Length: 257
Ligand code: PEP
Image 1: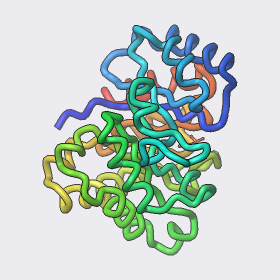
Image 2: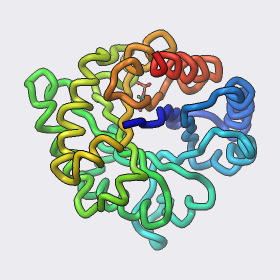
Image 3: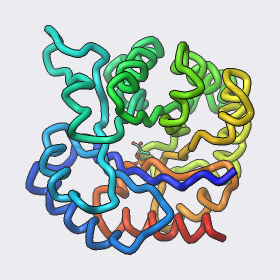
Protein backbone atom coordinates (compact mmCIF):
# COMPACT_ATOMS: atom_id res chain seq x y z
CA UNK A 1 0.00 0.00 0.00
CA UNK A 2 1.54 3.27 -1.16
CA UNK A 3 0.96 6.15 1.24
CA UNK A 4 2.21 9.56 0.17
CA UNK A 5 4.49 11.01 2.86
CA UNK A 6 3.12 14.05 4.67
CA UNK A 7 5.24 16.46 6.69
CA UNK A 8 3.54 19.34 8.48
CA UNK A 9 4.91 22.22 10.53
CA UNK A 10 3.06 23.41 13.62
CA UNK A 11 4.16 26.97 14.27
CA UNK A 12 2.22 27.07 17.57
CA UNK A 13 2.06 30.56 19.12
CA UNK A 14 4.98 31.91 17.09
CA UNK A 15 5.33 34.48 14.32
CA UNK A 16 3.73 37.85 13.82
CA UNK A 17 2.04 38.35 10.46
CA UNK A 18 5.19 39.90 9.03
CA UNK A 19 7.41 37.10 10.34
CA UNK A 20 4.98 34.47 9.07
CA UNK A 21 5.00 35.91 5.56
CA UNK A 22 8.80 35.95 5.53
CA UNK A 23 8.98 32.32 6.67
CA UNK A 24 6.39 31.25 4.09
CA UNK A 25 8.31 32.99 1.31
CA UNK A 26 11.57 31.36 2.34
CA UNK A 27 9.92 27.94 2.54
CA UNK A 28 8.41 28.39 -0.86
CA UNK A 29 11.85 29.03 -2.33
CA UNK A 30 13.50 26.16 -0.41
CA UNK A 31 10.85 23.59 -1.28
CA UNK A 32 9.90 24.46 -4.85
CA UNK A 33 11.57 21.37 -6.33
CA UNK A 34 10.21 18.87 -3.82
CA UNK A 35 7.89 16.25 -5.29
CA UNK A 36 6.31 13.10 -3.92
CA UNK A 37 5.61 14.46 -0.45
CA UNK A 38 2.73 16.49 0.90
CA UNK A 39 3.96 19.46 2.90
CA UNK A 40 1.91 21.86 4.99
CA UNK A 41 2.43 24.62 7.51
CA UNK A 42 0.09 25.54 10.34
CA UNK A 43 0.59 29.18 11.37
CA UNK A 44 -1.44 30.94 14.07
CA UNK A 45 -4.97 31.99 13.01
CA UNK A 46 -3.83 35.61 12.71
CA UNK A 47 -1.39 34.77 9.91
CA UNK A 48 -3.54 32.36 7.87
CA UNK A 49 -4.72 34.92 5.33
CA UNK A 50 -1.25 36.36 4.73
CA UNK A 51 0.49 32.99 4.57
CA UNK A 52 -2.17 31.72 2.20
CA UNK A 53 -1.36 34.62 -0.11
CA UNK A 54 2.38 34.06 0.25
CA UNK A 55 2.00 30.37 -0.66
CA UNK A 56 -0.50 30.82 -3.49
CA UNK A 57 0.44 28.68 -6.49
CA UNK A 58 2.98 26.66 -4.50
CA UNK A 59 2.53 23.02 -3.48
CA UNK A 60 2.75 23.85 0.23
CA UNK A 61 -0.55 23.31 1.99
CA UNK A 62 -1.94 25.37 4.82
CA UNK A 63 -3.49 24.30 8.09
CA UNK A 64 -4.92 25.80 11.27
CA UNK A 65 -3.88 24.65 14.72
CA UNK A 66 -7.33 24.29 16.25
CA UNK A 67 -11.02 24.72 15.53
CA UNK A 68 -14.23 24.88 17.54
CA UNK A 69 -17.10 22.53 16.69
CA UNK A 70 -19.92 25.08 16.58
CA UNK A 71 -20.53 27.05 13.39
CA UNK A 72 -21.08 30.36 15.15
CA UNK A 73 -22.28 31.79 18.43
CA UNK A 74 -21.23 33.15 21.79
CA UNK A 75 -17.86 31.39 22.03
CA UNK A 76 -15.43 34.21 22.70
CA UNK A 77 -12.02 33.61 21.20
CA UNK A 78 -13.07 30.52 19.24
CA UNK A 79 -12.80 29.98 15.48
CA UNK A 80 -15.36 27.88 13.61
CA UNK A 81 -15.02 25.46 10.68
CA UNK A 82 -16.86 27.77 8.24
CA UNK A 83 -14.39 30.55 9.14
CA UNK A 84 -11.49 28.27 8.23
CA UNK A 85 -12.76 26.34 5.27
CA UNK A 86 -11.93 28.95 2.63
CA UNK A 87 -8.61 29.80 4.26
CA UNK A 88 -6.89 26.47 4.72
CA UNK A 89 -6.96 22.77 3.88
CA UNK A 90 -5.91 21.14 7.14
CA UNK A 91 -6.61 21.57 10.82
CA UNK A 92 -4.72 20.09 13.76
CA UNK A 93 -7.13 18.58 16.27
CA UNK A 94 -6.37 17.23 19.73
CA UNK A 95 -2.79 18.46 19.99
CA UNK A 96 -1.47 17.52 23.45
CA UNK A 97 -0.97 21.19 24.31
CA UNK A 98 -4.68 21.78 23.69
CA UNK A 99 -5.51 18.73 25.79
CA UNK A 100 -3.18 19.39 28.71
CA UNK A 101 -3.00 23.21 28.89
CA UNK A 102 -6.52 24.04 27.70
CA UNK A 103 -8.35 21.03 29.09
CA UNK A 104 -9.67 19.59 25.84
CA UNK A 105 -11.32 16.24 26.37
CA UNK A 106 -11.66 13.24 24.06
CA UNK A 107 -15.30 14.25 23.62
CA UNK A 108 -14.34 17.72 22.39
CA UNK A 109 -11.76 16.22 20.06
CA UNK A 110 -14.45 13.98 18.59
CA UNK A 111 -16.86 16.92 18.13
CA UNK A 112 -14.13 18.96 16.46
CA UNK A 113 -13.32 16.11 14.08
CA UNK A 114 -16.95 15.79 13.03
CA UNK A 115 -17.30 19.54 12.57
CA UNK A 116 -14.07 19.91 10.60
CA UNK A 117 -14.99 17.04 8.27
CA UNK A 118 -18.49 18.42 7.74
CA UNK A 119 -16.91 21.59 6.38
CA UNK A 120 -14.34 19.95 4.14
CA UNK A 121 -11.30 20.49 6.35
CA UNK A 122 -8.71 17.71 6.54
CA UNK A 123 -7.95 16.93 10.18
CA UNK A 124 -4.56 16.01 11.59
CA UNK A 125 -5.62 14.12 14.71
CA UNK A 126 -2.99 14.00 17.47
CA UNK A 127 -2.72 11.27 20.08
CA UNK A 128 0.03 10.35 22.50
CA UNK A 129 0.81 9.30 26.04
CA UNK A 130 2.58 11.23 28.78
CA UNK A 131 5.77 10.18 30.55
CA UNK A 132 4.06 8.52 33.51
CA UNK A 133 1.82 6.48 31.24
CA UNK A 134 4.82 5.53 29.14
CA UNK A 135 6.85 4.45 32.14
CA UNK A 136 3.92 2.52 33.58
CA UNK A 137 3.60 0.53 30.37
CA UNK A 138 0.20 2.07 29.62
CA UNK A 139 1.02 3.56 26.22
CA UNK A 140 -0.90 1.09 24.10
CA UNK A 141 -4.02 1.11 26.21
CA UNK A 142 -4.04 4.90 26.45
CA UNK A 143 -3.28 5.65 22.81
CA UNK A 144 -5.75 3.01 21.63
CA UNK A 145 -8.41 4.60 23.84
CA UNK A 146 -7.66 8.07 22.48
CA UNK A 147 -7.98 6.83 18.89
CA UNK A 148 -11.28 5.05 19.61
CA UNK A 149 -12.76 8.04 21.45
CA UNK A 150 -11.71 10.56 18.81
CA UNK A 151 -13.13 8.48 15.96
CA UNK A 152 -16.52 7.74 17.50
CA UNK A 153 -19.07 8.03 14.69
CA UNK A 154 -16.48 8.78 12.00
CA UNK A 155 -17.07 6.69 8.86
CA UNK A 156 -14.56 4.69 6.85
CA UNK A 157 -15.06 7.15 3.99
CA UNK A 158 -14.17 10.07 6.27
CA UNK A 159 -11.00 8.28 7.35
CA UNK A 160 -9.63 8.88 3.87
CA UNK A 161 -9.07 12.56 4.65
CA UNK A 162 -7.84 12.19 8.22
CA UNK A 163 -4.15 12.05 9.08
CA UNK A 164 -3.14 10.75 12.49
CA UNK A 165 -0.13 12.00 14.39
CA UNK A 166 1.37 9.87 17.14
CA UNK A 167 3.03 12.39 19.42
CA UNK A 168 4.28 11.08 22.75
CA UNK A 169 3.98 14.06 25.09
CA UNK A 170 7.37 13.36 26.67
CA UNK A 171 9.00 13.87 23.28
CA UNK A 172 7.32 17.16 22.38
CA UNK A 173 9.61 20.16 22.69
CA UNK A 174 12.00 18.25 24.96
CA UNK A 175 14.77 17.39 22.52
CA UNK A 176 14.24 13.75 23.53
CA UNK A 177 12.53 12.05 20.59
CA UNK A 178 11.15 8.54 20.59
CA UNK A 179 13.28 6.06 18.72
CA UNK A 180 12.29 5.29 15.16
CA UNK A 181 11.68 1.68 16.12
CA UNK A 182 9.65 2.61 19.19
CA UNK A 183 7.41 5.01 17.26
CA UNK A 184 7.04 2.49 14.44
CA UNK A 185 5.92 -0.14 16.93
CA UNK A 186 3.16 2.05 18.36
CA UNK A 187 2.01 3.35 14.97
CA UNK A 188 2.11 -0.01 13.22
CA UNK A 189 0.84 -1.75 16.35
CA UNK A 190 -1.89 -0.23 18.46
CA UNK A 191 -2.78 2.67 16.14
CA UNK A 192 -3.20 0.70 12.91
CA UNK A 193 -4.66 -2.23 14.83
CA UNK A 194 -7.34 0.04 16.32
CA UNK A 195 -8.16 1.35 12.85
CA UNK A 196 -8.41 -2.21 11.56
CA UNK A 197 -10.81 -3.15 14.36
CA UNK A 198 -12.91 0.00 13.96
CA UNK A 199 -12.97 -0.09 10.15
CA UNK A 200 -11.00 -2.59 8.09
CA UNK A 201 -7.48 -3.65 7.20
CA UNK A 202 -7.78 -1.52 4.10
CA UNK A 203 -8.50 1.63 6.13
CA UNK A 204 -5.74 0.76 8.61
CA UNK A 205 -3.26 0.46 5.77
CA UNK A 206 -4.46 3.56 3.90
CA UNK A 207 -4.51 6.17 6.67
CA UNK A 208 -1.36 8.25 6.93
CA UNK A 209 0.20 8.35 10.37
CA UNK A 210 2.86 10.87 11.31
CA UNK A 211 5.30 10.80 14.18
CA UNK A 212 5.77 14.01 16.18
CA UNK A 213 8.13 14.92 19.00
CA UNK A 214 11.53 16.63 18.69
CA UNK A 215 11.90 15.86 15.00
CA UNK A 216 14.97 17.62 13.57
CA UNK A 217 16.91 17.52 10.29
CA UNK A 218 19.42 15.07 11.78
CA UNK A 219 16.87 12.53 13.08
CA UNK A 220 14.02 12.63 10.54
CA UNK A 221 15.60 9.79 8.53
CA UNK A 222 15.35 7.49 11.56
CA UNK A 223 11.57 7.95 11.54
CA UNK A 224 10.91 8.09 7.82
CA UNK A 225 12.90 4.94 7.14
CA UNK A 226 10.38 3.02 9.26
CA UNK A 227 7.66 1.30 7.22
CA UNK A 228 4.68 2.38 9.34
CA UNK A 229 5.63 6.06 9.70
CA UNK A 230 4.35 8.21 6.86
CA UNK A 231 5.57 11.61 7.89
CA UNK A 232 6.09 14.01 10.74
CA UNK A 233 4.37 16.76 12.63
CA UNK A 234 7.14 19.20 13.44
CA UNK A 235 7.02 21.95 16.07
CA UNK A 236 10.20 23.82 16.97
CA UNK A 237 12.17 22.83 13.89
CA UNK A 238 9.43 24.14 11.59
CA UNK A 239 10.06 27.73 12.67
CA UNK A 240 13.13 28.15 10.46
CA UNK A 241 12.92 27.59 6.72
CA UNK A 242 16.29 25.85 6.41
CA UNK A 243 15.58 23.30 9.14
CA UNK A 244 12.02 22.55 8.01
CA UNK A 245 13.15 22.25 4.39
CA UNK A 246 15.97 19.92 5.47
CA UNK A 247 13.46 17.79 7.38
CA UNK A 248 11.29 17.49 4.28
CA UNK A 249 14.21 16.69 1.98
CA UNK A 250 16.00 14.29 4.34
CA UNK A 251 12.70 12.65 5.21
CA UNK A 252 11.73 12.09 1.62
CA UNK A 253 15.15 10.69 0.79
CA UNK A 254 14.93 8.25 3.72
CA UNK A 255 11.44 7.16 2.69
CA UNK A 256 12.63 6.48 -0.83
CA UNK A 257 15.46 4.40 0.61
C1 PEP B 1 4.43 19.42 18.17
O1 PEP B 1 4.15 20.38 18.85
O2 PEP B 1 3.54 18.84 17.53
C2 PEP B 1 5.81 18.96 18.16
C3 PEP B 1 6.04 17.77 17.69
O3 PEP B 1 6.75 19.81 18.67
P1 PEP B 1 8.35 19.63 18.62
O4 PEP B 1 8.70 19.21 17.21
O5 PEP B 1 8.92 20.96 18.95
O6 PEP B 1 8.70 18.56 19.59
